[in-house]
Each structure stands twice: as C-alpha cells, then as structure tokens.
Length: 109
Image (cartoon, rainbow, N blue to C red):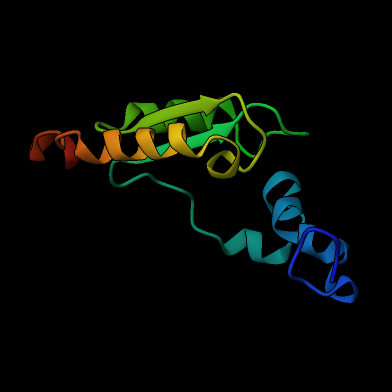
C-alpha cells in the first residue's frame, strides 16, 4: 500500500491527473463533446484555502453565488476540509441544509 492510502503503490501514476488536465488545458478529445456546466439548483461549495493549487476559478465562485440559495465557503484548511475541520464543516453543511429554499420562481431561473 502507498503510505497513508488504501491503494497499492503500483496502481498510482500520473494518469490519475487526467481529469485535471482535461479541465485546465482542454487537452482531451472528449472535452470537445462535454456539456457546459450550468448550475441548475442551489449548491453549497466548500473548499480549503491552503492547498498547492486551486481546483476552481473566481468565475466559478461567482456563478455559484449568483444562483439563489447557493453559498461558497473557504476554510483555513487544505483540500480535505472535512478531515481538518470536521466540526466547522459539519456545522456549515447543516446550517446550509436547514436554510429555507428560495421561492420557486427564483429557482426556475
């Protein structure tokens, strides 16, 4: 096993980064037929600020915030917010889930 994982070291390689390369560099043929992301319902987007690189853009954050009922939260953690700050993470999720949904006409945007 690779140290700190449940995966055999032999199965870990650079190909695991393929989804990131597709997203960042548009370097995969499947990317040409991929659907454009459109947020159709409220979303809670939580991420950690302390990590080697961002997995999203400010435009993505703004798109989430523009959707009624959605929320973006940045934690002082690495990638695994739920492991590094479990109580704060759970509180944030529970609070968001208990927040009433926007009116149906707002959700239909």
